[in-house]
Length: 155
Ligand SMILES: [Cu+2]
Image 1 (cartoon, rainbow, N blue to C red):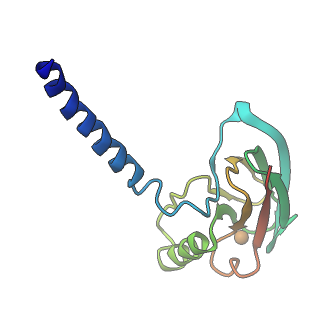
Image 2 (image 1 turned 30 degrees about the horizontal axis):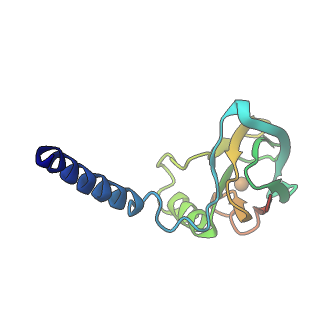
């Protein structure tokens, strides 16, 4: 009996420690204003077409439902290169600053697309929490005007 307890107690302590570490992990920290995450194609519930012109998104307001995965089909009908990036306003500002200060660096944000005139691409995105999610073209000279909002309705 004592031998068994001697085995179980350290195991239980280890599991408790493990769960504490998982709960405190930075991946889950401060996630109350989630902007969603890249989604997978077989979970897409609908396509939403977004057109880029110089310098705005049409439409610039999109409605989705909590938990929904959508395919954003983005086409650049402008005469200049444009991007579409989804994030918090803070993320977008950071991206815009990076584009301004390091124009030669390749952006690495999840779900970002960069389109030349007449190019089309898509972002598959899952909106996992209700609220408002921002998107923008973070390129220099575009960022102030070229913005939009995705309203994630509570299910
Ligand atoms: Cu742009």
